[in-house]
Amino acid sequence: MLLPAPNIYYTVDGEVGSLSVLEKLTNGYIQSGDVAGPIVSRMKNALKQAKHHDEKGRTDQAIHFIEKYLDELDHLTKKDAISPLAKKTLFYHASLLLKQWKSE
Image 1 (cartoon, rainbow, N blue to C red):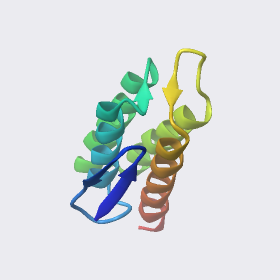
Image 2 (image 1 turned 60 degrees about the vertical axis):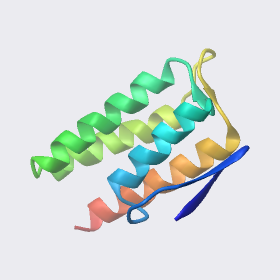
Image 3 (image 1 turned 135 degrees about the horizontal axis):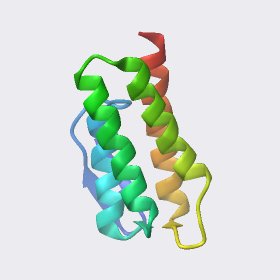
Image 4 (image 1 turned 45 degrees about the vertical axis):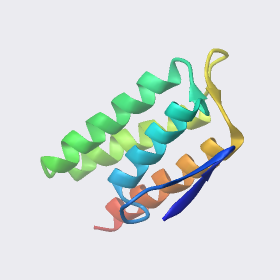
């Protein structure tokens, strides 16, 4: 799947709405500088926790951490930086994952 970033395009393997795609997108936007500041560690931690709980079969806790990830996107601090495209793309993919996990 070819995904846009402001001045680059990169390929992300995986199913749309999956945790692996959300992780790859997040890391890609961090590497490109489209996500920067303290939000980086908060987003990475939320994804790490979601993955841990998903692997342990604790879907409710995994959902909690994806909701926290989405909250981070919605409540930026003055030191956080995120491009409009990165925010929209990450919000979309996190929402798809959340919808999928809630329907299981």
